[in-house]
Image (cartoon, rainbow, N blue to C red):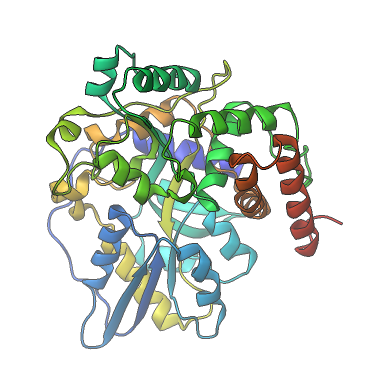
Length: 417
Protein backbone atom coordinates (compact mmCIF):
# COMPACT_ATOMS: atom_id res chain seq x y z
CA UNK A 1 0.00 0.00 0.00
CA UNK A 2 2.86 2.36 0.88
CA UNK A 3 4.60 1.74 -2.46
CA UNK A 4 1.37 2.46 -4.29
CA UNK A 5 1.01 5.76 -2.44
CA UNK A 6 4.58 6.77 -3.28
CA UNK A 7 4.16 5.86 -6.96
CA UNK A 8 0.91 7.82 -7.11
CA UNK A 9 2.39 10.81 -5.33
CA UNK A 10 5.38 11.02 -7.65
CA UNK A 11 3.29 10.46 -10.77
CA UNK A 12 0.76 13.12 -9.76
CA UNK A 13 3.50 15.62 -8.99
CA UNK A 14 5.24 14.88 -12.27
CA UNK A 15 2.04 15.14 -14.28
CA UNK A 16 0.91 18.42 -12.75
CA UNK A 17 2.50 21.85 -12.82
CA UNK A 18 1.73 24.67 -10.45
CA UNK A 19 0.16 27.91 -11.59
CA UNK A 20 2.74 30.21 -10.06
CA UNK A 21 6.00 30.30 -8.20
CA UNK A 22 6.51 31.81 -4.79
CA UNK A 23 8.37 35.10 -4.98
CA UNK A 24 11.32 36.07 -2.87
CA UNK A 25 12.93 34.44 0.14
CA UNK A 26 11.66 34.73 3.68
CA UNK A 27 13.85 34.56 6.75
CA UNK A 28 14.91 31.08 7.84
CA UNK A 29 13.55 31.88 11.28
CA UNK A 30 16.26 29.96 13.16
CA UNK A 31 17.58 31.53 16.35
CA UNK A 32 19.62 28.62 17.73
CA UNK A 33 20.67 25.08 16.99
CA UNK A 34 23.06 22.91 15.04
CA UNK A 35 22.50 21.52 11.52
CA UNK A 36 24.77 18.91 9.92
CA UNK A 37 23.58 17.22 6.72
CA UNK A 38 24.95 14.09 5.04
CA UNK A 39 23.87 13.13 1.53
CA UNK A 40 24.81 12.34 -2.05
CA UNK A 41 26.73 14.82 -4.19
CA UNK A 42 24.79 15.39 -7.42
CA UNK A 43 23.71 18.94 -8.38
CA UNK A 44 20.14 18.95 -7.03
CA UNK A 45 21.31 17.79 -3.60
CA UNK A 46 24.16 20.29 -3.69
CA UNK A 47 21.53 23.00 -4.25
CA UNK A 48 19.51 21.80 -1.27
CA UNK A 49 22.64 21.66 0.87
CA UNK A 50 23.64 25.17 -0.14
CA UNK A 51 20.15 26.42 0.66
CA UNK A 52 20.38 25.02 4.15
CA UNK A 53 23.88 26.43 4.69
CA UNK A 54 22.53 29.88 3.79
CA UNK A 55 20.51 29.72 7.02
CA UNK A 56 23.66 29.80 9.16
CA UNK A 57 24.14 32.78 11.47
CA UNK A 58 26.08 33.71 14.59
CA UNK A 59 23.91 31.39 16.69
CA UNK A 60 23.31 28.59 14.16
CA UNK A 61 25.96 26.30 12.71
CA UNK A 62 25.05 24.64 9.40
CA UNK A 63 27.38 22.12 7.72
CA UNK A 64 27.06 19.57 4.93
CA UNK A 65 28.94 16.43 3.96
CA UNK A 66 27.83 15.59 0.43
CA UNK A 67 29.65 12.53 -0.87
CA UNK A 68 29.12 9.46 -3.01
CA UNK A 69 29.95 7.44 0.12
CA UNK A 70 26.99 8.85 2.07
CA UNK A 71 25.36 5.43 2.57
CA UNK A 72 28.54 4.11 4.15
CA UNK A 73 28.56 6.78 6.86
CA UNK A 74 25.02 8.02 7.48
CA UNK A 75 23.88 5.26 9.86
CA UNK A 76 27.06 5.40 11.93
CA UNK A 77 26.93 9.19 11.95
CA UNK A 78 23.37 9.18 13.28
CA UNK A 79 23.76 6.35 15.82
CA UNK A 80 25.84 8.23 18.40
CA UNK A 81 24.07 10.30 21.04
CA UNK A 82 24.09 13.11 20.21
CA UNK A 83 24.21 12.21 16.52
CA UNK A 84 26.97 13.68 14.39
CA UNK A 85 24.53 14.30 11.55
CA UNK A 86 21.22 15.97 12.24
CA UNK A 87 19.83 14.98 8.83
CA UNK A 88 20.48 12.46 6.10
CA UNK A 89 19.29 13.11 2.55
CA UNK A 90 17.90 9.77 1.40
CA UNK A 91 15.99 7.94 -1.31
CA UNK A 92 13.60 4.97 -1.46
CA UNK A 93 16.39 2.55 -0.69
CA UNK A 94 18.57 4.37 1.81
CA UNK A 95 15.79 5.45 4.19
CA UNK A 96 15.12 1.80 5.03
CA UNK A 97 18.48 1.31 6.73
CA UNK A 98 17.90 4.42 8.85
CA UNK A 99 14.46 3.19 9.92
CA UNK A 100 15.78 -0.31 10.63
CA UNK A 101 18.39 1.19 12.97
CA UNK A 102 15.87 3.59 14.52
CA UNK A 103 18.07 6.66 14.00
CA UNK A 104 15.53 9.04 12.42
CA UNK A 105 12.53 10.61 14.10
CA UNK A 106 8.92 11.00 12.94
CA UNK A 107 8.33 14.51 11.61
CA UNK A 108 4.60 14.93 12.27
CA UNK A 109 5.04 17.47 15.06
CA UNK A 110 7.53 19.52 13.06
CA UNK A 111 5.34 19.37 9.95
CA UNK A 112 2.36 20.58 11.97
CA UNK A 113 4.28 23.51 13.43
CA UNK A 114 6.63 24.55 10.62
CA UNK A 115 5.65 22.66 7.46
CA UNK A 116 2.39 24.29 6.43
CA UNK A 117 3.76 25.08 2.98
CA UNK A 118 4.84 21.50 2.22
CA UNK A 119 2.66 19.55 -0.18
CA UNK A 120 0.97 16.34 0.93
CA UNK A 121 2.77 14.29 -1.72
CA UNK A 122 6.11 15.49 -0.33
CA UNK A 123 5.41 13.80 2.99
CA UNK A 124 6.80 10.26 2.96
CA UNK A 125 4.63 8.34 5.39
CA UNK A 126 5.54 4.95 6.85
CA UNK A 127 3.11 3.17 9.17
CA UNK A 128 1.12 6.37 9.56
CA UNK A 129 4.08 8.57 10.50
CA UNK A 130 5.90 11.14 8.35
CA UNK A 131 9.51 9.95 8.16
CA UNK A 132 10.91 12.11 5.33
CA UNK A 133 10.16 15.12 3.13
CA UNK A 134 10.65 14.44 -0.58
CA UNK A 135 11.88 17.17 -2.90
CA UNK A 136 12.54 15.41 -6.22
CA UNK A 137 11.73 12.37 -8.34
CA UNK A 138 14.32 10.35 -10.22
CA UNK A 139 14.75 7.38 -12.54
CA UNK A 140 17.34 5.92 -14.90
CA UNK A 141 16.64 6.19 -18.60
CA UNK A 142 18.28 6.29 -22.01
CA UNK A 143 20.80 9.03 -22.81
CA UNK A 144 22.32 8.93 -26.29
CA UNK A 145 24.22 10.71 -29.04
CA UNK A 146 21.71 11.53 -31.75
CA UNK A 147 24.47 12.35 -34.23
CA UNK A 148 26.23 9.01 -33.77
CA UNK A 149 23.01 7.03 -34.12
CA UNK A 150 22.15 8.98 -37.27
CA UNK A 151 25.60 8.34 -38.74
CA UNK A 152 25.23 4.62 -38.09
CA UNK A 153 21.64 4.47 -39.32
CA UNK A 154 20.46 3.26 -35.91
CA UNK A 155 17.00 4.10 -34.60
CA UNK A 156 16.69 5.30 -31.01
CA UNK A 157 16.33 2.04 -29.07
CA UNK A 158 13.26 1.30 -27.00
CA UNK A 159 14.50 -2.14 -25.91
CA UNK A 160 17.81 -3.44 -24.67
CA UNK A 161 17.90 -5.87 -27.56
CA UNK A 162 17.76 -2.89 -29.95
CA UNK A 163 20.50 -1.19 -27.95
CA UNK A 164 22.75 -4.22 -28.36
CA UNK A 165 22.10 -4.39 -32.10
CA UNK A 166 22.81 -0.68 -32.43
CA UNK A 167 26.03 -0.97 -30.44
CA UNK A 168 27.25 -3.78 -32.69
CA UNK A 169 26.57 -1.72 -35.79
CA UNK A 170 28.36 1.36 -34.39
CA UNK A 171 31.40 -0.75 -33.52
CA UNK A 172 31.41 -2.65 -36.81
CA UNK A 173 31.32 0.63 -38.73
CA UNK A 174 34.36 1.84 -36.80
CA UNK A 175 32.57 4.86 -35.34
CA UNK A 176 33.19 4.00 -31.67
CA UNK A 177 34.99 0.97 -30.23
CA UNK A 178 33.00 0.91 -26.97
CA UNK A 179 29.72 2.66 -27.76
CA UNK A 180 27.86 1.75 -24.55
CA UNK A 181 28.23 3.24 -21.10
CA UNK A 182 26.80 2.12 -17.78
CA UNK A 183 27.19 2.57 -14.05
CA UNK A 184 28.46 -0.97 -13.51
CA UNK A 185 30.93 -0.29 -10.72
CA UNK A 186 31.18 -3.33 -8.48
CA UNK A 187 29.02 -2.78 -5.43
CA UNK A 188 25.92 -0.59 -5.21
CA UNK A 189 25.89 0.46 -8.88
CA UNK A 190 26.16 -3.03 -10.35
CA UNK A 191 23.48 -4.26 -7.97
CA UNK A 192 21.16 -1.47 -9.10
CA UNK A 193 21.66 -2.42 -12.75
CA UNK A 194 20.68 -5.98 -11.82
CA UNK A 195 17.59 -4.69 -10.02
CA UNK A 196 16.53 -2.66 -13.06
CA UNK A 197 17.03 -5.50 -15.51
CA UNK A 198 15.43 -8.12 -13.28
CA UNK A 199 12.32 -5.96 -12.87
CA UNK A 200 12.25 -5.52 -16.65
CA UNK A 201 12.25 -9.31 -17.01
CA UNK A 202 9.24 -9.48 -14.71
CA UNK A 203 11.21 -10.95 -11.81
CA UNK A 204 10.14 -10.97 -8.17
CA UNK A 205 12.93 -10.63 -5.62
CA UNK A 206 11.30 -12.60 -2.81
CA UNK A 207 8.84 -15.41 -2.42
CA UNK A 208 5.31 -14.03 -1.84
CA UNK A 209 4.76 -12.80 1.69
CA UNK A 210 8.27 -13.77 2.74
CA UNK A 211 11.80 -12.46 3.17
CA UNK A 212 13.08 -15.58 1.39
CA UNK A 213 15.05 -14.51 -1.67
CA UNK A 214 14.05 -15.89 -5.07
CA UNK A 215 16.37 -14.72 -7.86
CA UNK A 216 18.23 -17.89 -8.86
CA UNK A 217 15.80 -18.69 -11.67
CA UNK A 218 15.39 -18.27 -15.42
CA UNK A 219 14.70 -14.55 -15.12
CA UNK A 220 17.75 -14.04 -12.93
CA UNK A 221 19.95 -15.89 -15.42
CA UNK A 222 18.46 -13.90 -18.31
CA UNK A 223 19.14 -10.68 -16.39
CA UNK A 224 22.81 -11.50 -15.89
CA UNK A 225 23.15 -12.66 -19.49
CA UNK A 226 21.87 -9.29 -20.75
CA UNK A 227 24.12 -7.34 -18.37
CA UNK A 228 27.13 -9.31 -19.58
CA UNK A 229 26.18 -8.79 -23.23
CA UNK A 230 25.90 -5.05 -22.71
CA UNK A 231 29.23 -4.90 -20.89
CA UNK A 232 30.98 -6.35 -23.94
CA UNK A 233 30.36 -3.01 -25.69
CA UNK A 234 31.61 -0.94 -22.72
CA UNK A 235 35.05 0.21 -21.67
CA UNK A 236 37.13 -2.78 -20.47
CA UNK A 237 37.27 -1.25 -16.98
CA UNK A 238 33.47 -0.95 -16.73
CA UNK A 239 33.47 -2.50 -13.24
CA UNK A 240 35.14 0.69 -11.95
CA UNK A 241 32.60 3.06 -13.54
CA UNK A 242 30.04 4.74 -11.30
CA UNK A 243 27.79 7.54 -12.57
CA UNK A 244 30.62 10.08 -12.44
CA UNK A 245 33.00 7.95 -14.50
CA UNK A 246 30.30 6.94 -16.97
CA UNK A 247 29.33 10.56 -17.50
CA UNK A 248 32.98 11.46 -18.03
CA UNK A 249 33.16 8.84 -20.79
CA UNK A 250 30.07 10.34 -22.42
CA UNK A 251 31.45 13.88 -22.15
CA UNK A 252 34.71 12.73 -23.75
CA UNK A 253 32.80 11.48 -26.79
CA UNK A 254 33.48 7.79 -26.13
CA UNK A 255 29.88 6.69 -25.51
CA UNK A 256 26.87 6.70 -27.82
CA UNK A 257 24.22 5.18 -25.53
CA UNK A 258 23.85 4.65 -21.79
CA UNK A 259 21.31 4.15 -19.02
CA UNK A 260 21.72 7.18 -16.75
CA UNK A 261 19.98 8.94 -13.87
CA UNK A 262 17.62 11.77 -14.76
CA UNK A 263 19.19 13.83 -11.97
CA UNK A 264 22.44 13.84 -13.94
CA UNK A 265 20.95 14.70 -17.33
CA UNK A 266 20.66 18.48 -17.06
CA UNK A 267 24.35 19.01 -16.29
CA UNK A 268 25.75 16.26 -18.48
CA UNK A 269 27.14 18.46 -21.26
CA UNK A 270 27.28 21.86 -19.55
CA UNK A 271 30.81 21.51 -18.18
CA UNK A 272 33.66 23.33 -19.85
CA UNK A 273 35.68 21.35 -22.34
CA UNK A 274 32.91 19.08 -23.63
CA UNK A 275 33.39 18.73 -27.42
CA UNK A 276 30.79 20.64 -29.41
CA UNK A 277 29.68 17.52 -31.29
CA UNK A 278 28.87 15.88 -27.94
CA UNK A 279 26.91 18.94 -26.83
CA UNK A 280 25.01 19.10 -30.11
CA UNK A 281 24.33 15.36 -30.21
CA UNK A 282 23.11 15.07 -26.60
CA UNK A 283 19.63 13.53 -26.42
CA UNK A 284 17.33 11.88 -23.88
CA UNK A 285 14.64 9.22 -24.18
CA UNK A 286 12.60 7.11 -21.78
CA UNK A 287 13.67 3.86 -20.14
CA UNK A 288 13.96 0.72 -22.24
CA UNK A 289 12.21 -2.62 -21.87
CA UNK A 290 13.74 -6.08 -22.26
CA UNK A 291 12.79 -9.62 -23.26
CA UNK A 292 9.49 -8.55 -24.80
CA UNK A 293 8.15 -7.21 -21.52
CA UNK A 294 6.15 -4.02 -21.07
CA UNK A 295 7.53 -3.03 -17.65
CA UNK A 296 10.49 -0.65 -18.09
CA UNK A 297 13.83 -1.98 -16.88
CA UNK A 298 14.22 0.84 -14.38
CA UNK A 299 12.95 1.97 -10.98
CA UNK A 300 11.15 5.11 -9.90
CA UNK A 301 12.73 6.99 -7.02
CA UNK A 302 12.19 9.94 -4.73
CA UNK A 303 14.89 11.83 -2.87
CA UNK A 304 14.18 13.64 0.38
CA UNK A 305 15.49 14.57 3.79
CA UNK A 306 15.12 13.19 7.29
CA UNK A 307 15.80 14.42 10.82
CA UNK A 308 17.95 12.46 13.26
CA UNK A 309 16.42 10.95 16.40
CA UNK A 310 19.42 11.32 18.72
CA UNK A 311 19.56 15.11 18.75
CA UNK A 312 17.99 17.85 20.85
CA UNK A 313 14.61 19.31 19.97
CA UNK A 314 16.41 22.61 19.32
CA UNK A 315 18.68 20.98 16.73
CA UNK A 316 15.76 19.07 15.20
CA UNK A 317 13.79 22.29 14.79
CA UNK A 318 16.77 24.10 13.28
CA UNK A 319 17.37 21.22 10.87
CA UNK A 320 13.73 21.04 9.79
CA UNK A 321 13.51 24.80 9.26
CA UNK A 322 16.78 25.00 7.32
CA UNK A 323 15.86 22.15 4.97
CA UNK A 324 12.32 23.42 4.48
CA UNK A 325 13.82 26.77 3.52
CA UNK A 326 16.23 25.00 1.14
CA UNK A 327 13.35 23.54 -0.91
CA UNK A 328 11.02 26.51 -0.97
CA UNK A 329 9.47 27.33 -4.38
CA UNK A 330 11.62 30.45 -4.78
CA UNK A 331 14.68 28.31 -5.57
CA UNK A 332 13.09 27.60 -8.95
CA UNK A 333 13.50 31.25 -9.91
CA UNK A 334 17.07 30.25 -10.77
CA UNK A 335 16.86 28.78 -14.28
CA UNK A 336 19.84 26.50 -13.67
CA UNK A 337 18.34 25.10 -10.48
CA UNK A 338 15.02 24.51 -12.22
CA UNK A 339 16.71 22.14 -14.67
CA UNK A 340 18.60 20.11 -12.06
CA UNK A 341 15.78 17.72 -11.17
CA UNK A 342 12.15 16.78 -11.49
CA UNK A 343 11.34 18.84 -8.43
CA UNK A 344 8.41 17.93 -6.20
CA UNK A 345 8.03 21.60 -5.38
CA UNK A 346 5.24 24.08 -6.16
CA UNK A 347 6.12 26.08 -9.24
CA UNK A 348 8.14 23.37 -10.97
CA UNK A 349 7.63 23.33 -14.71
CA UNK A 350 8.94 20.39 -16.76
CA UNK A 351 12.18 20.97 -18.62
CA UNK A 352 13.64 19.20 -21.64
CA UNK A 353 16.18 17.48 -19.40
CA UNK A 354 13.38 16.01 -17.28
CA UNK A 355 11.57 14.16 -20.04
CA UNK A 356 13.30 10.85 -19.35
CA UNK A 357 12.00 10.78 -15.78
CA UNK A 358 8.55 11.88 -16.96
CA UNK A 359 8.60 9.04 -19.48
CA UNK A 360 9.55 6.58 -16.75
CA UNK A 361 6.59 7.64 -14.63
CA UNK A 362 4.19 7.64 -17.58
CA UNK A 363 5.27 4.09 -18.50
CA UNK A 364 4.27 2.81 -15.04
CA UNK A 365 7.81 2.12 -13.91
CA UNK A 366 7.84 0.48 -10.50
CA UNK A 367 9.38 2.15 -7.44
CA UNK A 368 12.52 0.77 -5.87
CA UNK A 369 11.28 -1.83 -3.34
CA UNK A 370 11.01 -0.43 0.17
CA UNK A 371 10.88 -3.65 2.16
CA UNK A 372 13.27 -3.65 5.14
CA UNK A 373 15.42 -6.49 3.79
CA UNK A 374 15.87 -5.15 0.24
CA UNK A 375 19.06 -3.40 1.29
CA UNK A 376 20.56 -6.71 2.39
CA UNK A 377 19.85 -8.17 -1.05
CA UNK A 378 21.26 -5.07 -2.74
CA UNK A 379 24.49 -5.47 -0.76
CA UNK A 380 24.71 -9.18 -1.58
CA UNK A 381 24.21 -8.49 -5.29
CA UNK A 382 26.90 -5.82 -5.26
CA UNK A 383 29.37 -8.12 -3.56
CA UNK A 384 28.77 -11.32 -5.53
CA UNK A 385 28.14 -10.44 -9.18
CA UNK A 386 31.60 -9.23 -10.21
CA UNK A 387 33.01 -12.73 -10.76
CA UNK A 388 30.27 -13.51 -13.27
CA UNK A 389 30.77 -10.20 -15.06
CA UNK A 390 34.48 -11.06 -15.40
CA UNK A 391 33.72 -14.53 -16.75
CA UNK A 392 35.00 -16.33 -13.66
CA UNK A 393 31.80 -18.21 -12.83
CA UNK A 394 28.39 -19.09 -14.24
CA UNK A 395 25.26 -17.03 -13.81
CA UNK A 396 23.71 -19.79 -11.75
CA UNK A 397 26.71 -19.91 -9.40
CA UNK A 398 26.75 -16.13 -9.02
CA UNK A 399 23.05 -16.10 -8.14
CA UNK A 400 23.54 -18.96 -5.70
CA UNK A 401 26.32 -16.96 -4.06
CA UNK A 402 24.01 -13.93 -3.82
CA UNK A 403 21.25 -15.98 -2.24
CA UNK A 404 23.65 -17.52 0.29
CA UNK A 405 25.11 -14.15 1.26
CA UNK A 406 21.65 -12.59 1.55
CA UNK A 407 20.24 -15.49 3.57
CA UNK A 408 23.10 -15.31 6.07
CA UNK A 409 22.58 -11.56 6.50
CA UNK A 410 18.78 -11.87 6.72
CA UNK A 411 19.10 -14.51 9.45
CA UNK A 412 21.54 -12.35 11.36
CA UNK A 413 19.09 -9.43 11.16
CA UNK A 414 16.14 -11.58 12.22
CA UNK A 415 14.25 -11.49 8.92
CA UNK A 416 14.64 -15.26 8.45
CA UNK A 417 14.77 -18.10 10.95
